[in-house]
Amino acid sequence: MSGVHLSNCLFPYSGAGVTFRVAGEGLLLVEGPDRVFGFRGLPRDVVGAIEAMAPGRSLAEAEATVETRHLALLHRQLEDLLRRFALVVGIGTEAGLVALLEPASPRVRFPRSLAPPTGGELLSRFASLRRDGSALVLESPLAHARLVVHGVEAVALLARLTGPCDLGQISSTGAPWTGPLCNVLRGSGFLTSATRDGGTAEDDDLSLGSWEFHDLLFHTRSRLGRHAFPMGGLYPFPEVPPPPASRALPEGRRIVLDTPDRALLAGRDPSLSAVVDARRSIREYGDEPLSLPDLGEFLFRVARITRRRTAEVQVHSTTVTMEFAHRPFPSGGALYETEFYVAVARCQGLVPGLYFYAPAEHALILLEEDPAKLGPLLADASRCTGVPVEALQVEIVVSARFRRMSWKYRGMAYSAILKHVGGIYELMYLAASAMGLAPCALGIGNPDLLADLTGTDPFEEGSVGEFLLGSSRVIPDP
Ligand SMILES: Cc1cc2nc3c(=O)[nH]c(=O)nc-3n(C[C@H](O)[C@H](O)[C@H](O)COP(=O)(O)O)c2cc1C
Image (cartoon, rainbow, N blue to C red; front, side, top):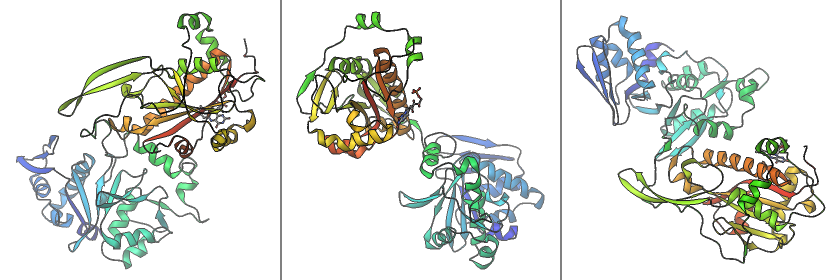
């Protein structure tokens, strides 16, 4: 594909809300909705070509206004603008665009400087096509750009690329934009090479090949770097009040737990070093099941509300009064979205069933007393740990009220919740270890099972962690 041909099918122009303006000799001013920056010392023709860029005007038209010796500089300048999220690049013909390249990270490449397509390539298994607003977008955690796809012809090309294609051949036989689009797909990281044995280069790569699609997408989207989506404490739903500090107490019989004497606990507890050294996952239990006072003490150490406070929070242009209910573990934004449910199979002094832990009242509320209904939950725990189901004593299910986090945080709400579960697990291990109980974290759980038992909407509040607790038959190392 010749460079002229490629330039005819690329349509660079300023991104949403951005304008390019010549503000003096060799000075290009870039004005965006939330920033202004400039470039000095550029040749007059390059600055003029960039200022004239608009939808429907091809790169070839811009290049025609620039001296040949300035072409490379023009392309570098456009790449710089793309990398600063000030430029988008349409792909298509004068009759219309088939796709729009939008930068997703400062490592994006301007398509004019990409190597031409070679043979034997197909879509990466990490690429995905989805609706975003009214647009169809192609995204990939491996790409530094995303592609807004216009129309069925581009979709048909993507469908064809689900198997290995000779890009040179489809470029020379397809519509004029086929080569440029293949070039963009390849250069932006949406494609992988087919290998001789029927595999792909990305799967033969030991690091990449071991990632699952959803894990890599979640990893990259919940961290900075490979997307341009807003992240952090941005309060995206200012029109609705913040979800409460802790959940409303469910109906049910209450078992008020004894409040441990904290001075007594402090005097009795082994040192932190001893507790950390003794901490183990224990999957064998003592002959006598865990007792209700021990379960109560464990929940007090791990999950009670330690203090409540009210604060005025600045949410965009208004101030919102928010309640915070702290617990013994840390929580991003002090939002404390987690709740604790206790599935009791065997516990001295407590009838089997599912309980909600009321953290301010330090009480258990019985939600389901038919032990048979706990069967699927306990069966999963047994499968995960190898503990026979009839030996299980107590499973603590950690749930999250997702909106408490997503009301404040964008892009990181769910990853922060999982980090909270890590902190909670460690506190549970340490508390159990200090008390000589048998703890074991679980890696897998089923939110639908908790939702079936509690009647909650699993997308409003869902289980995010599970933890087994029992009496110990293991005497910890001294
Ligand atoms: C996030 C997480 C998930 C875990 N999932 C399981 C599990 O599903 N089944 C299990 O038997 N142990 C599970 N464990 C316990 C680990 O197997 C255990 O921590 C590891 O073998 C180290 O042993 P230790 O805890 O005795 O030091 C998990 C631990 C963590 C932190």
